[in-house]
Image 1 (cartoon, rainbow, N blue to C red):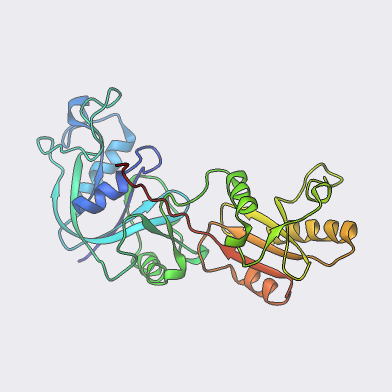
Image 2 (image 1 turned 120 degrees about the vertical axis):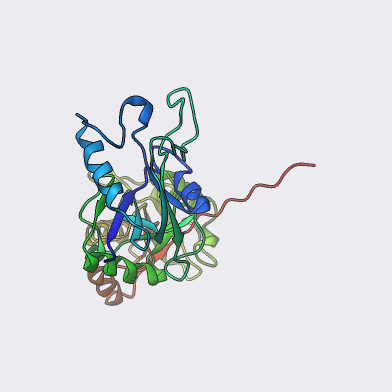
Amino acid sequence: MKNYWKVFCEETEFPGLWPRWYKNQCAAVGWRPKRGQTLEGKTDDTGWAMARKAIKCIAPGDMVVVQLRNHRVGRIGEVVRKLIGDNEWNPTVPPSKEHPFGGKGRRIEVRWDLNVGPTDPETVVLLPTCSRLALVRPTICRIDPKAFDCVVKAMKDDANWVGLHGRFDRERSLSDYIATYPFRLEDNLMPYPDKKVRENAFDDNTRSDILLIDKNGTPVVVECKQGAPTMENIKQLRGYMNHIHGITRKKPRGILVHGGAASLRDEVRKEVALDPLLRIIRYSLLVDFVPCT
């Protein structure tokens, strides 16, 4: 009987871990044998006790989904074989001063299903609310077949595809970029010509991220968010628009720029559809490096 499993990938703690798993067609867990965490015998480590029970049960033909932080998943794969023995330690986290023997060395070799989800390891899937896995921890555990099917369905929808690291760490950085290159957001956008209006603070000492003007002379209020837009974000943007309306006596447009998935929440999509003055735009971050000659 086929079983379904999720393995948590600590990409945040070990940058590059997920692309390494992808390249080597494996998922892996830690608990190094030389620390006394052996595959057999007694253990006082509750986490290891749960993990070794799971990896012992995994069998070729089972399906594995790699889970990442923030409700994201990497790929799904079919288990080909296990290299989990105490004498088979092969780290997927390179050795370092802190980890002299490396980490995540008990490997579960898989064959990634490249027909489900993106093929680029730098692109992952942000699961919508209805498809999210309830368990972030433990590191490895069995999941319900219905939950697995929901994950597969979400992975097939490219509107849920997001960059693994393709986000500005700070909303301020994104705001600065748009303020410098407003035409990349929309043709003919320019910084609002009155600096005092651009920098005018609201009653609570906050201000909109960016104030631009379009080719028709209409003020454009831009608000930047790292994650998927919410109703609260729209409320915030409208508050800024009302404030600018009071100052300029012109009804402004509003643009919400975000780094979440292309697929919007139903309530957000419906709200924006009813307001022609609002737009929601998703950004993607692409960086290239060229050697000097």
